[in-house]
Length: 206
Length: 289
Image (cartoon, rainbow over all chains, first blue to last red; front, side, top):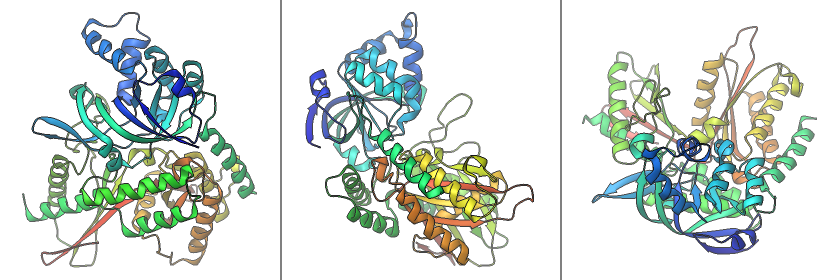
């Protein structure tokens, strides 16, 4: 287990060097996205025959931000001060809800990872292996601690349509702390813990 | 804004930004039990640092400020309609001050109301009691932990769980196993035995107001709470599901009468950010617990 500093955009070699249990401090520009955002990306971009004209500008922007980039599963508490947005509290939300979408989103945009909590399933793990990405676990509920590492809110998309928690917030972070719990070599801490707890459960049920 | 509304805004601020002392103490003790440098230990260290930062802010301990769930105990003759109006005003104001994230979403069109007010939102339970005072208990319950709550109907054949406390023990262990780290472990379990499907969850959540050190007055339930606390931790799921010694911080069980045909065991899983706060108001004097 080592501690690594990485800057977004991240190279494939840097992601492939990570192993489960490693601690990473991430810096650079990332984008928040959760349930509504994933459904939207899949329907309008990933599985669409053509990107709707009205969504083209946002599509190009997301392509630019997510190449080698990171989506953060987060619905923040925000505040506006002198016309600028700030993150007040910004811990991760449960990632498994994005399992039906994430593998395709990673492949489509050439992402290097997602940040969330609780881990994800086999499709995402396979996408991490195939495309060189990792699942980065933030501490659930550590909302103020993480908000402190968000130095700037650059812009927000779809706030009025999706609401504050579900919008795409484009943020610049410095030393955002995460643990690698699914790596690009097919290893998942979540699978290991589930298997061990299954054995313990069976013993306790008698 | 009325005086009571101001007091309620303060109650919401406390619930959202100040973790109760017993929960923080249990998290500190949990940290001591983990191997230094392990993912479990660093998760607990981050949690504790976050709790201290939130208190200083003041800022929400967790960005998912959840469903505000109020349990109101009011004296005879007090208008519950008026209390509801004051609570709604306080919730909207607390949202404006960023103590709460706007969390009320229209289930049909997906629109967020922006102020935490909506149909059935916030949740308020009223009980008239024999005291002169008004008591307001508030729980902020986030979605991650709410999603892993589960209700079993006994007998539950897959686990050979019958209609007795041994059956209850089995399904609770199964529920915690299924939750893994998804509910932001280490969590607190509020459990109801009995009731119908609706009151089961109401009573299970009521258990979450009991301090961790509270001992159940019924000896058989006190024994089960203690045993389940030990055995849930033997599952080894650990903080955030990273593996480790502490999977739950407390287990609290209550019972309701049930139908002869029904035996529900309802588990309300609360994340480590067990944000509960209490306000008592008597003769215009307010105390917060």
